[in-house]
Image 1 (cartoon, rainbow, N blue to C red):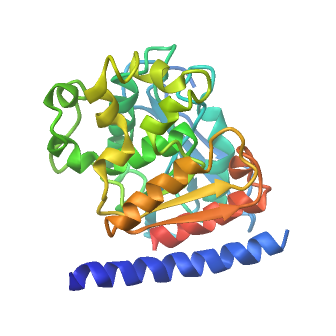
Image 2 (image 1 turned 90 degrees about the vertical axis):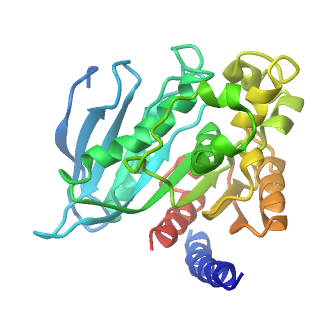
Length: 315
């Protein structure tokens, strides 16, 4: 209990500092199998951003791209931010949505892994989307030595459906404890010491309550499209895929939501945070101005608030 109080105090202190910074900001207002090395445009301080693209599987959508700031000789990157894009898990939306974010994070001194994955319509959906996200995060373990990545802190920044996948992946250590062995067997994953575990999540208007999202028929049946049918047909699959089921998590989750978001209801973040808080989990709701897409636009105060919260979780 003393340890929980200490961690909670540290979390609130970090988030409080980041929120204060955010308030200041708001007020101021590649083919499959290929690896690409290059230099992107300069960041806020004129630093070059280097890019490295890697496959983590054989499918054309199983890849990620590292965006790295320059380092002094012999130094290492303090943690990595895993950027997980949204688009209601549908194939027409891809990692191009996360590219500006990853580039901006690197320009501000943070290593970023822009993760692509199979979506519903191009080989994804249940269970492949879930398997890809975990495998894609684990790929960082293979890249750590080559790119001087310290994987002590690994924080996910997920938008919309990406927020769902980030919060779900943060609970990977509890999946076998959920009492749904049939569903669990359908999501193969690394379970040994080579697995890369998230140490925090910033959800940007994330779909954090799948049961409610299905009831509301968000985006014309997007949840059913992801999971291959209704919750009546696949009740265990739904519970297994819902971040609410794994609460409380042992890592902090900050749910950021746009005040003018009409794409994902605020209740998706509120219900998750309320449930987590009741279970003594380190979680918080942060409301920022802007619509659903303002949170992934590096020019907006809402996005910059997310960036500072990510920085606080990296430590």
